[in-house]
Length: 156
Image (cartoon, rainbow, N blue to C red; front, side, top):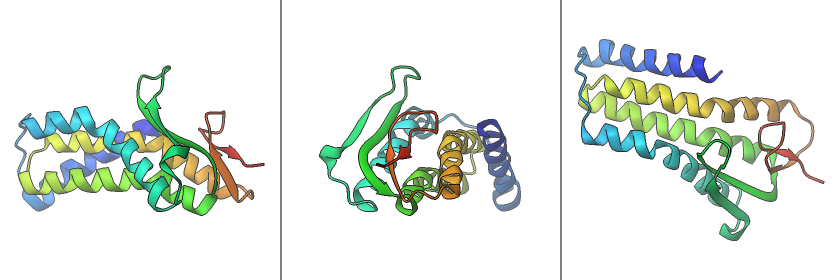
């Protein structure tokens, strides 16, 4: 799913440049480089804020750390969460980071943002997959731990 979302996001960025801006400038400016470096952190911080605001979880019950296997940041909690709220927390970073990148794309007309949009959507692919699987389950309370179901499991 991630490769599909990367291609979709990149194509969407190019389409926006063609239809709205009608420009294909490609500049690797400082903002693009900073966004590329920080997009993973912003993505996980959005999860963290979502857990705090939407699920009302205390900061002490949240874990913001680096995954040793994949060398990327992640946010987790062992507190049981309502699946509807967890669904929102899972898709929130994809929406926020993609809108932020689309806005930068429209304002600057720089087609390089199209590739960042693809990266943002690809990063959200695993979250989206887990969110879709979560909606199919009957159990209402979930914990976000690392397991075979994509970092969440049924709460006891």
